[in-house]
Image (cartoon, rainbow, N blue to C red; front, side, top):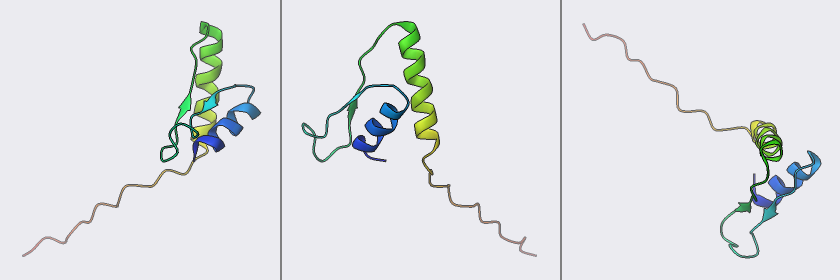
Amino acid sequence: MGAEEIVQALVEHGVLIRSLAAHHATRGLVRVTVGDAQQNARCVSAFERVVGRVQRPQPPAQLTLPDAE
């Protein structure tokens, strides 16, 4: 998920953040300004919902070998 997608998804949750894509074109960075405790809690909750939708790659399965007899 790129910076612009994160910004758009959070806007849909009522949270405004800034994309820094114009300043760091090769990196997907966003800027979050600290607010009061209630605003921060709402921001963290929205981030969890948005990031939770992203499919994370699964670690490779452990390969088990039969016992050598």
